[in-house]
Image (cartoon, rainbow, N blue to C red; front, side):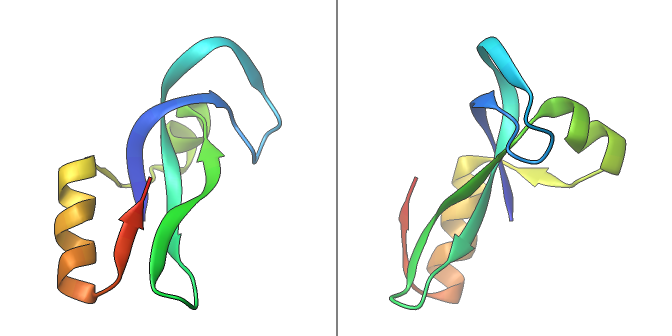
Length: 72
């Protein structure tokens, strides 16, 4: 899932921003059940690909429903 957050860079394109920008965390669940940020996604990449992003509260609700715990 892609969670809207401020990011310092885009891990996909390698672009680094002078100041944090509104992008997204790519969040995934690991084998232990922990959901965490595995990659920063920049706003240009989100717009270019039309990636659906959700709020932190929406992400927490999904995680509660699916199981595990959030650390982001």
